Length: 506
Image (cartoon, rainbow, N blue to C red; front, side):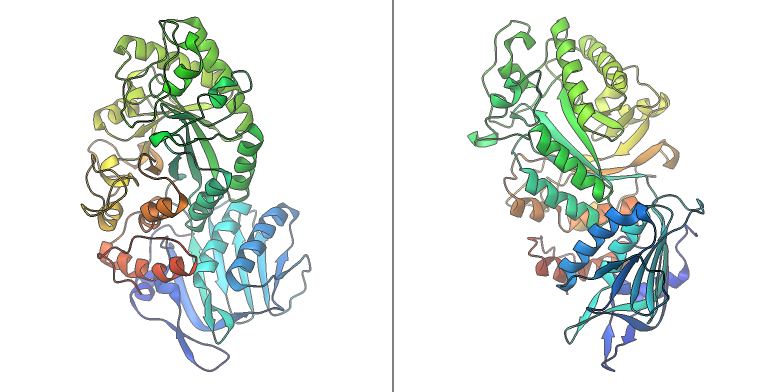
């Protein structure tokens, strides 16, 4: 499969494309609006009609669970359920899901072929099938009550293996259904990691059975003094399973040694003076620290990581490590070194914010750039891979402009064009593609309190971050034309999105 974008794609993205439907009318179809931008697109005359007699053919049992998710999502899109079949009969009106064992293109690659007789999604893994279906959903056109897919051939695969977003459930707590909704939004645009910020000064949000007061006390409030909340381990497992069905890996973050007031308020012994701290509902940072000289601290960290790792099938545990201003540097480095050892002892690899690059990083650990290019380069020199999350370009909690009611502005305003127009491979001197695992767009929740506000902060910027991660950054003028067509889709879904004046919304 070709990785480079061909001239064919550009011609079809820029031009208006039409198909002939059974009604003999002409209708523009959204080959020129796909996000992320596919590697190659070839259009043809005609269309496949999706009707009540259309079937979804699944010939490999490895696709059974994926086919169920696809069938449910398609039902939500068109309003009725399609039959799943294991029949291999060559009949018209079938959407074929086919696993290809060639092992040539990567497990997330897919091929999508649409003719007037059938649809074929072919991939080397269920993940590729799922991503091909996400493209198919964007191509659905309704006319006179009927649904059509334009005849086309698409080959596609991602640029980066890590394409994620972070949701902070610590500053304000968001329940399991909200997190599932966030997962759905990531899946729509082929993102594959959700980083959950589970512990901070304002709240501890994951049940730890060996330290129960972390949630009963430390999870009892949030920014502004609300009632807070937390996930039981069963609820967390449900989130993990829901994400897994959509090929999204959960990365849990337990921030340490700073951003730990909720823990320090829950257990007096984690403080150097042996006195429990008061719960905190403000938004200041950098004032808290675990007592790095006490052995009980590392017993605590080991217990927490052990339980979280057992609940999390993904390869990573995030230990935070940012803004630890209340911890002396020598103590900080000692702590991160031990935390890394603890994470690895439980079968996971450590991710840390860029400050952790100062420690003795393993080459299998990952550093997440948010503020310091120098720390990122230091991590790179130690062999660690980078997740690119520059606050000035990728923080979803930054205001769009000075009139935005929600969000912060300490890293600057991030309008939709600024959020899209940066290349992780060239953003910083000395850091190139070979050092980069992928990108992540974090949403911190100091000012965000509900799903309506989450949607406003992530849409439309999330689509651009997804494209950077999957396709690589493109031309802004061309991208904004594709983006314009997604506003109507979001509105139809009831998504509260920011209608940027930078885009001529359709």
